Image 1 (tube, rainbow, N blue to C red):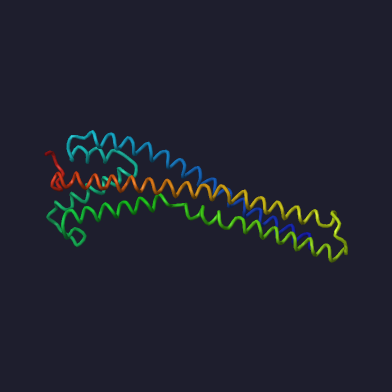
Image 2 (cartoon, rainbow, N blue to C red):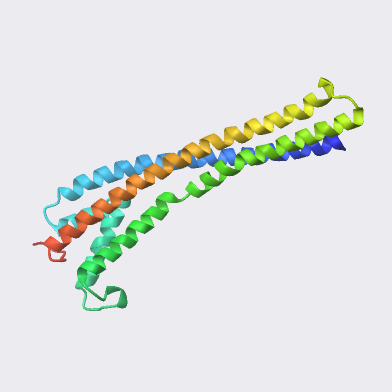
Length: 219
């Protein structure tokens, strides 16, 4: 009964750590691919946007592009269009610059939330995986102590099995936590850089809009 309980507890711990590890590496590859794709999309969009000869041409080019800078620009042009509309709503009440700033800020926050998706999972795995492994370790030590009390001896043959399984659980917990923590730190840094890029572009878009008197059209 003791062997079955010990084996079941350790196996359950290892399976849980395996699930954590699979989720971690899935997020690492998916977030890495998202970062690479976003960087390429943003560089292409900036070349197209700044090559435009008018706000209208810039608007047309933003519709054809993808990426978070393109979505930010689309939100900005949509805000400008709405401020020019005769139909006014509460969201469009106020100074044009304030409306545009508010809508750009809201879009930056939406993009930030999108970029941050999955990071909390990595943080949770990185902080809990060692303790899950420690649970297996403690269980193995408890089993070893029980075997010692039953047999009345602390020979290597009695404790090697439970202690060995305990060390495996500890190693799996650490091996699962390290990639999760490193990926989380990398992801947080990349999100900060991208949010800074979003805010800088939003400021540039606001200045262009002020220069064009908040109008979109062939000027």
